[in-house]
Length: 170
Image 1 (tube, rainbow, N blue to C red):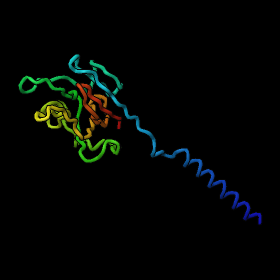
Image 2 (cartoon, rainbow, N blue to C red):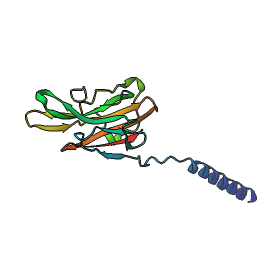
Image 3 (cartoon, rainbow, N blue to C red):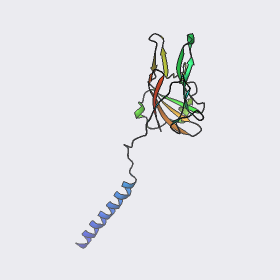
Image 4 (cartoon, one colour):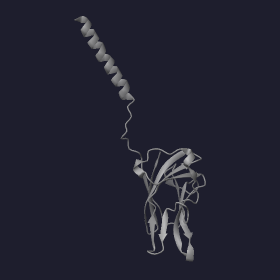
């Protein structure tokens, strides 16, 4: 009888020790990722420069700019651009909220002029027929080569020269 109690007691202690050691290393898959939403100023006043690393509008060190650009027929349009230190990946199939990591570094390409007016992945597309501006539905992943940090980025809306976007570090 004493042997059964000792084995039982030892098993409980062993299980409790395993539980404590595993519980301390438990990964919470439901952790909230910090998603930051930004509302720009009017680029007709001044170019808007944004720094993803410091989460602030900053014109000395920036990754994204929002400005005006002269188009055909002297039309002034809004335009988004990336710093020359930014690499870009365009995500066309996975929703912004479902992006949890950056793709392989071999899939990134130079981001400068890609999101701007007449760029390959123009964010703000002017419809000459309706005279309105549509916002790209794509999500983007940017990689800052100077800090070696990646961010997912989604443009939300454009209204009367004000642009809204959200992003999160990956």
